[in-house]
Image (cartoon, rainbow, N blue to C red; front, side):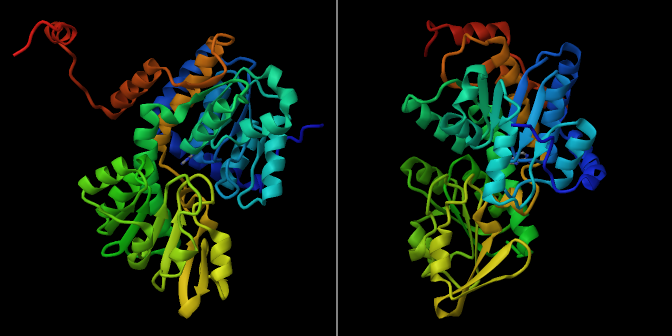
Length: 421
Ligand code: ADE
């Protein structure tokens, strides 16, 4: 198949995209240092990378870094609504990257874009949600012999990869970037926390102070969303299925209750569970007039939209990114961004300063896998501890934060067992 060079909205948006990519770069000092070293050492020379990531200003900086290291990168979107069209244009025009991504593309185009990216015959896959790995293993197995590794950005993708590994079908090593501490402790918590509220505010302009915000799921993302909503003066209710996380949320000071109870009192519902039908017909049936629903989990399955469609007498677009469903009793239920990742659809995703660390992990993981080529077993691997520590060190340095060192006496003490009470 002939490979089309790109498929994006509008090349004329390129200048605006370049300005915004450069702006983001200022907040990505760790990735910048890596890019500078890559430009000198060219550790990725000749490596073809297929990347399926949200096409944002931060991703553009990652792609530039990989290219500086000598890689040939082809890029498609990891969600039909998350593409920033000006960024896609700038990558094509200024960086000569084949990009296949258009904000609002339908499902057929979304998969055609994955196919177009794979037509570049990658040695390496970089996923955010496991879609490339999944497509390769289901339909493009002919590519497998040339692929030596991959990386995965997000919790949902890592869960899918582990399921593939458990079923014995995963055919190459993949690094779970999400599981690095410098990724999930910051990106998932502070990134999702801030960008989700940013998106709700941009889409609705509602005042959060005094509202009851229901956060479904108290993983790293849920913790971040809950803490930022509380910071804006909301009453925060958390729902959970895991007793430990529910206990943690309780002791963090949130009210914890089952969703069926929360559904009656919530003004704004935010799902961040990674699971299906967390908000369902029985919840819509008891929600207050004007309830706002959104999702910041990876897939658009957390809110049962077909059930909402069935329950609705009428549906209309309230304002951009808001669909107003009129249900029984004339109540209106407002769905944001079609139930897709609201922070990327209605805002700009996580701020650059946290993506700095996530994408530093991506860049260094590719370099590591290339060095270890042929030595890593098929399966899901952690980011090496040394990379995680180095990224934390570089980030602190860039932020001008200095820390203490263990004295020789303290090191000896920690290594000894003789001293006690
Ligand atoms: N995932 C969440 N926020 C993101 C961003 N700004 N860029 C790329 N991927 C993201």
